[in-house]
Amino acid sequence: MSVLTDVVISRVTDQGFGVADLNGRSVYVDRTYTGEKVRVRIIEEHPTYYNAHLVEVLEASPFRIEPECCYSSCGGCAFNFIDSKELLKLKNEFLLSCLKEQCVKFDCILPECSGMYDFHGYRNKAIYYVRAQNGKFVIGFFSKNSHDVVEIYGCIMEPDFVSSANEIIAKWAEDFNIHAFDESTGRGLIKNIIYRSGEGTGERMLVVVATDFQIPNLDELMLRLEPLKFTSVWICRNKSQGNSIWTDELKKISGKEHIYTCLAGLKYEISARSFLQLNIKQCEKLYGLVLEFADVKSSDVVFDLYCGIGTITLKLAQKARKVYGIEIVPEAVKNAVRNAELNDLRNVEFIEGKSETVCEELVNKKQIRADIVVVDPPRKGCDSSLINTLIFLNPEKIVYVSCNPKTLARDLKLLESDYKITKIATVDMFPNTLHVESVVKLTRAGL
Image 1 (cartoon, helix red, strand yellow):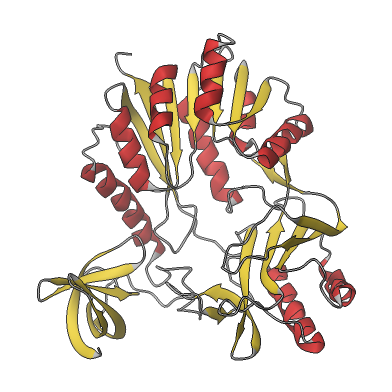
Image 2 (tube, rainbow, N blue to C red):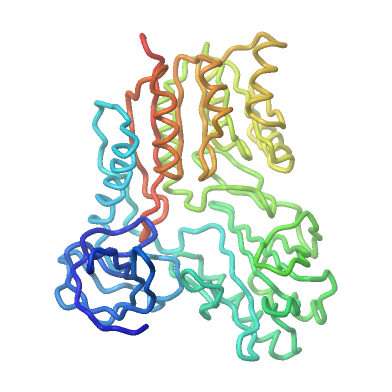
């Protein structure tokens, strides 16, 4: 199907599509914004909606700008054509719409989203896909809603060394006939290239994801990469047929086991697979809100659930009597213990396991109760069992950190009978997208 038509965009989705109405069906158009009149080409027809490509903007939004990036099809910055101040408003509107949809009650004011106006080079981690396309070794990012790789060596949101390294790797692959992975056949050697960098330390990590530990002419690649001064280089062996990245099979090729980063006055040890917020400057704002909302006293006992490598836990420990960090990923717990040692914080204990199980043991077996609970779940939000655990713990305050307004709203509704929302704020962690980090303070009902 290929039909040209003119439509008016009435709203946008969190995935970056403008939505118009045509004959009682929704039309989804990439890279369009509310209020714009656009000419589109209908490419797919479904029972309740159409998918369309943008052909021409007939009447542009006053908030439309010329993107700084020349790659419009990489699938990363869905809203890089919209003014950043307008986008901050949209992030708050997205959160409020999710809360309204779940009928979540609150009467506190949502301040303006805390933005970032200079986002050049902010990302401390970059994941590139390597694929065989038309007989070529291609490095880049997936195009939106596809597994086609758009050839990109570097992004303005990443440090400069990333593009330099990608150029070196591409030339090395060409010189020595190194094969990229082919999803259609499952053949090929190199699948991904991952970069990590430490804020305030200058340290860098490179991870090559490959189908085998044995990479021909690897010594030559290492020689060519020497000017970029990587602190740590690894190979992750991944034999799977699909586009998954990480496995447990990691082998250090050179350098140190870890790199270090500074965050909000503390130092953290980062391993290849450690979770760390990609935007350190905005992360410091986020953690500032967590501390403000928690309002930790020197007599308080705090539980930090989904604690990862302990970034929030250790900030809480600077103020609390005792903090328990709970995390299910063993490697993250090891990093967290080491990070406590690095920063000489001794009033913190990290426990490996499911939050529900560990919390029950702390309360029932050790008679330890939390005055404050901080929870920072993944995008799927809290399991219903963890919501029950939060109610069981019955702390005076809960500080909920969320990267997904939809699951946040769902969980807040489940807590509504026992807790009231007393503060809420947002932080722009990923400029040029509709992604938003939220922090919510919940106070026990009746206090």
